[in-house]
Image 1 (cartoon, rainbow, N blue to C red):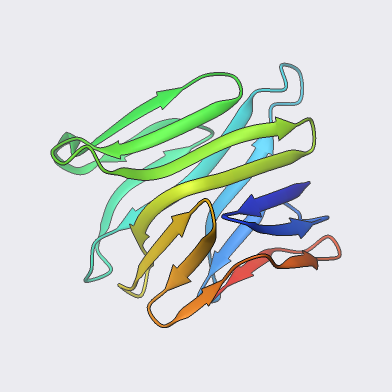
Image 2 (cartoon, rainbow, N blue to C red; image 1 turned 180 degrees about the horizontal axis):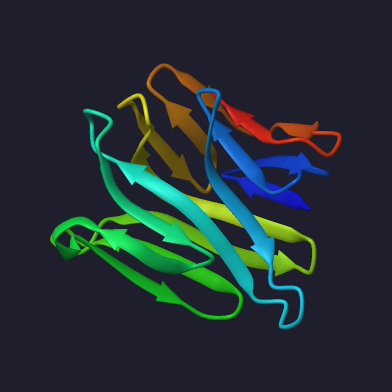
Length: 141
């Protein structure tokens, strides 16, 4: 599976996105329906778990602070209070998933920002990169 994060393309991944060396997001297609499936954990700035999603279904949502909207080919997770988009995934082709917008904390409490042009983690940023992951995880940070 190819994963786009901002303007960066990671080819031949196993669907796992590691942030700062920790698997934080996993994307897949449902074997029979082809629907987009996203599994992830969201944290606050202190590294405390706020929400957990498994196969595009909210399993834990502390104080109902997050709103999930999904279709077969896209998924958007927002902060209920501010309306800020935390994650926006969409299928661009049968084997290409795009994370085009997002703003969330890593397990280590650092803010990761994804825009259509780049991903940025504190002082690290990457745009326009194409990388072959050779069947492994996408690594950010």
